[in-house]
Length: 566
Image (cartoon, rainbow, N blue to C red; front, side, top):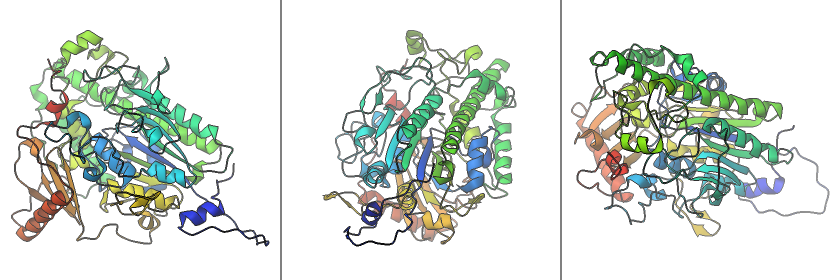
């Protein structure tokens, strides 16, 4: 099958030019080719959880994309799923797109404010809407978590065909909620309630449906945009046993040993600089303080986690193989990343019991060693194992430290000339929408769409950096602010200030995250002028974006589980 061309009319409209037609004969010209785009979003994937970033988990298909493309080792996202997804799909800061926090965690004091909705507002234009306007087919299969009502589902936000799970997560084997905060698992197909098939496994099903959607329009000349937000590796961490068993014994030495192996692997892979130090995230247990049975259970939880990543990679490979069979692989841009860092919620205790034990008994979940990760099993790696997934970075999901915000980013395909390498150039999640628009030959809406004023895209286009025609993305003096649940950060050049309210650390810290990604050397006292300037810039960011203060005693995890814990 030939690459899909862009019509001359659409090309001119995309370039912002008027279209007129002449009856006189014109010489035929080759029409420009527009690439297909596959945006793959893992869920709660840690910084070194894939092999090209130094991890031990087998991910040959993701590695193949890295070898053919460019890996970003200094890419930052939000510390939680919905804010990250909202910024990823709009290029607009989370305090302007309506999703500064997940709706399940918004405190009562913030609810009702127009920029604290927890769902995408009507002031932003989604990437899928803009691409569809220029002739792209737009498909989405996976976790949405940006709204349940008809006008908020992906089918109303620019996606032509959809399979969408609307909650924070759901079981990967069957249609059931994974937390007692939900009465049911909310699945939708093309905007209507959906029933999953009997042979459902999330990663397989999402790729099955993506292939089905692409095949429906294979014969026409329009390119496609496929957004695949996997449930892997969000809890419940579940995988077919044949994948989990591949990692039997891998984690028996414990998290301290595995953190160091990951650090060494990341250095060898060029993901972090030599000499990178890794602090031990406060609260991490000593492996040797556990009983043999506890060690066995913790190790198995990581084996299942590795199996879930491995299975996701295998199914990504199925999509790659399909695109090769229809002649579209070479004309497809792949973007692989994660919504945030590894999940460290402590839902499964060291003795395999759970804070949700009463609910588990009611609904039939268990955390038994023998069936961990299989149907009916609830698995979560917990905060101690999360330090492996994030290594050599500090902390994990929810926190504003690097382990919560820095995740892998790989971009591969036509238009990416810098292939097979890694870059430590700072990139932020809002940069991906303008980059994809540019690679697709589509225009930024510029703050106005179909006659309506919209929030302008704040991210920067990376396309020239991908071709090698520019050597930087953000200016050294440019400040990029961030806040989620009271955890705050501001990036400027190679530097970052961070304030982790969730860690009960009521102080700002300053780090050079290019030379010290492990955030081991606080420079606040050594560089007072820089520290003062960056904290002042954060205050300006917070004021400009109407960042609200957090109520006293707020804790994001407790807010989510309020009223349902044992």
